[in-house]
Length: 108
Image (cartoon, rainbow, N blue to C red; front, side):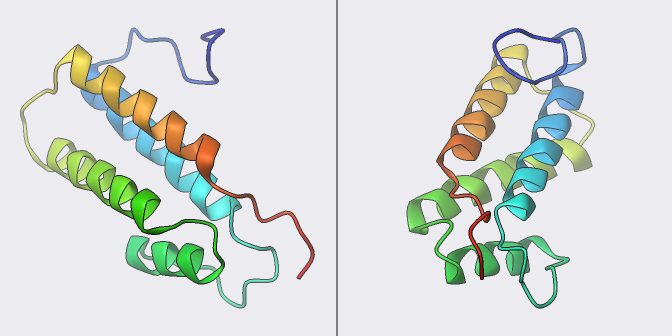
């Protein structure tokens, strides 16, 4: 493991690094929801809505998450490999967002 983060070592392909960073970010977003959420959201739009309603994210964080989602979707659905630099920027942005998200540990 990388000592700087909990990310996997950087010898994966750039596309794999982006996809893995999205998986970690989405898991972090889901973990930020209060445990008493009536029904866990299944779609990304529902997840963002639930996070907004529960005051876990604001408009700026939502815009940043949506931008990362667009990049993830482009990489997942096209044969072009992103650059190493793009993968590094993506991982850094995902980590920065996870650090900002308010956790859902308080009681309901």
